Image 1 (spheres, rainbow, N blue to C red):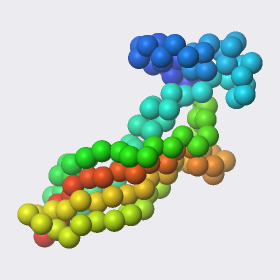
Image 2: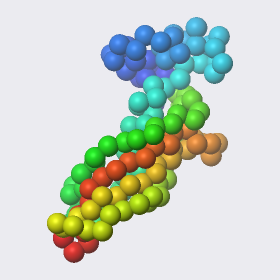
Image 3: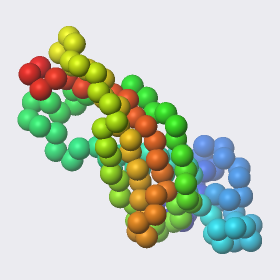
Length: 129
């Protein structure tokens, strides 16, 4: 994401914080430049953590329930390269064709530093559904 893109998004979402859109003021702050909106960082990591190719016949059948405990551990800067990993924290036994899955999603920058961590709950169809 280019510097002007996240600044425009901050403006469109009425986020007036200098840390996101004012290059001069943000340059005087602890990060030396504007940082990407936290909500955008979470959204990018969530997209990266989604399966690229779900099993045949199961695409689009999982239902996202919500995110919890979002932690923004480090700032994301314009030009950073992000990647994501996830691990299943818990699951319920399938009932009525599916069950709930909780996973922990972590977003990493190009320096292998965690920048975003959140818990996600979704309903997923059972393998036999």
